[in-house]
Image (cartoon, rainbow, N blue to C red; front, side):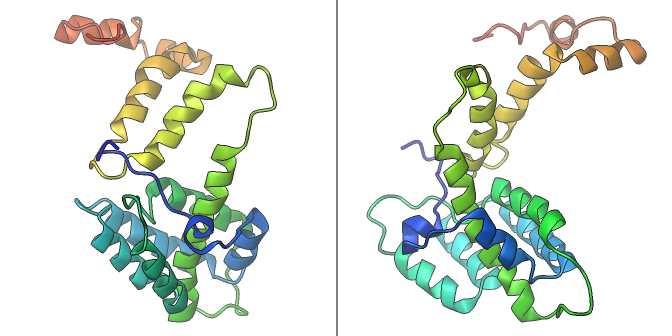
Length: 216
């Protein structure tokens, strides 16, 4: 396997624990929204550090943010893996939890802002990976879905490219050079701000390389 690309592990894979969206929503509803945001911000900073996808760093993050019982069970399962280690925490997972927190969480006097509540955030992140994996594994039902398969694949690829720092540029480049120039809203905005040439043409004029043709 390319060592710059790693899959993410799930609770179902490691512990045989089935997680559905309702489980995640219920768990998040018991945590103050402000605590979720604070923890996600801290975890995001840790994941941006070089080497954050390595086993020792991933386990350290887990023990710092997840409940102790779950963390111990996962570490035991991870160390028994026959294949290579992927990741437990990744950015797409954190973004998903943050989005779900907007829907499921609240801040009121009935919720405690304590360490126990904050540690539930790590559990929710691990649960979120199961939900994401279920979405990615679901077979398509629309015969026209193949038209959007490349865009979905590039978005999902971010989750598998956590080892090499900054590797998300692959997905961003595809979006910037391939998809955005075809968007009518982008054309209108370019006209409004006075940009007359397509991005690829402007880039070629500036740097002498045609980025719109593969291999150049």
